[in-house]
Length: 199
Image (cartoon, rainbow, N blue to C red; front, side, top):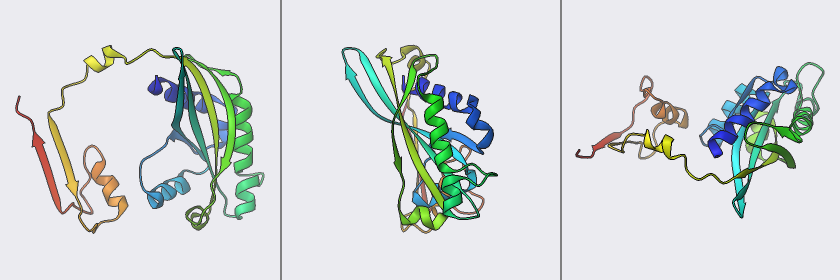
C-alpha cells in the first residue's frame, strides 16, 4: 500500500505542469541534517516525498504524505520564497502543487491537500534554503501485505555492519559506505563485521 502510494504520488508530481520548473522530484533521502541540506541545496528547486501518519477505520486507511518543497535563490531569501521570474519560488511551488493535487486521481486513490507548514531554523538559513511542506492525504482500502511480493524475497542470511566509533569520518563518507556497491575510495570504517547464518 505505502510503496504504491509513494510511487504514484511521485509519478503525479513528475507529470504535473510544475515539473518543468523543478530540478529534482524524489523520495525523501536519508542522512543527517547537514547531509540533507547539502543534497537539498544541490537539488533545488525540488520536491521530496515522504510518508506520514495513517489512520484506519473499518478497513479504510487514510494515509498522509508530505511533499517537502525546497527553494534556493542567489538573490536572497525573498527571491527564494517568492520567485524572481527566472527561478520558481517556494510559495509558487506550494501553491502549484496544492492546486494540482486537489482531487487528483491516481491508480489507487484520489489525493487531497490538507495543510502547509514551513521550516524555520538555523540549518536552513545557513544553507540559504527556503523549505515548506504540503501535507496530502489518500484514502485506500486496507489490502494487507502483498504476500506474492514477500514470497519472492530471499531469506535473511547475511548481516554486514561498518563501525566508525568516534566518528572519525564525515557523514558524507558514511553515506558512501551505505551505497551498493560500497564506495571506500576516500574513507574507510574503523571496523567492519559480516555475519552469515548457517544454511
